[in-house]
Length: 117
Image 1 (cartoon, rainbow, N blue to C red):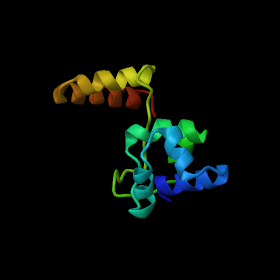
Image 2 (cartoon, one colour; image 1 turned 90 degrees about the vertical axis):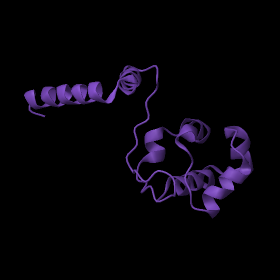
Image 3 (cartoon, helix red, strand yellow; image 1 turned 135 degrees about the vertical axis):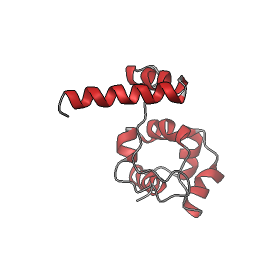
Image 4 (cartoon, rainbow, N blue to C red; image 1 turned 180 degrees about the vertical axis):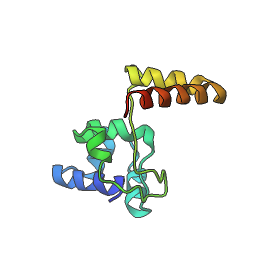
């Protein structure tokens, strides 16, 4: 099941029309129609608002999806709140040059191995 298929299933389960969903999420109706017609998935920037409108967590929306849409082939997705500790960690990591990122990854792997995980 793709993310868009899951969204349409949730819309049906909630008795929500595509028009109502479009208005509440601030996503153009044509975009939502494209998800269905072209079998594409929403861009990652829209996932949190989609979850809020549908009343589900990102985990609930993204779990059991296969990523068969034309956008983003990765079935495993992690959504981080930028203000969370993990979000701040990721933001700091992404601001580093590649050499520093490799050093950080090496250090994390060494820590993981030292704890036997």
